[in-house]
Image (spheres, rainbow, N blue to C red):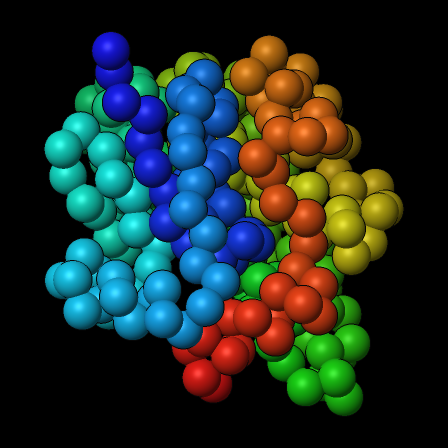
Length: 222
C-alpha cells in the first residue's frame, strides 16, 4: 500500500497552498499535520527535520522535503505536469515563478499593519491587471491553445488558476478585460480533480484571517 504524502505547515494557505493545489490536481490524496504551537515548531527544528529551519515540509517517497519551489518541481515532474522536454519545463518554471510572485504578495498582505493593508491589496490588484494578467492573456492569444505550455495540462495552468482565484477574492471583476483568461479559468476549473478541490470540504484553505495571522506571528515571532 502506497503511503500518502504528509504535509506539515500551519492551518492556512501560505507557502503550502500551491503544494496542496498541485497534489489535488494530480488526484493524489494527502495527510496534513498542522503546526499550532511554538513547541511543535521547535521540536521539528530540534529533530533536524527542517533543513533550513523553515516550513513547508513534505514527507513523500521516503524523503523529507523542504523549500517550496523544490517541492513543487518534484511533484510536477513526478505526476507528469512538467512538460515533455527541457524547453517546455523552463517555460513552465517561468510562468509558475511569475504567478508565485503575485500570490506571495497576496499572502504577505495579511501580515501588513492595518493602515498599510488596504493600500497593499489595491496595489496587488493593479499589478495583476497591468503586469501579470496581460502577459498570460498574450501567451494564450499567441499560441491559441487551451493550456499554457505544449497544449497539455501542467503545473503552470494549476498555479495560474490559483493566482486568478486569489486576486478575484480582492476584486471579483479583475478578469473583465481578459476574455481568454476568463475562458481559461472556466476550462481549468472544470477539470475533474480541480473541480473536486474547489468544492466545500476539500483541503483547500480559506483566505488568511486574524486567527491564522496571530498563530503564525506567535510561532515565528515576527
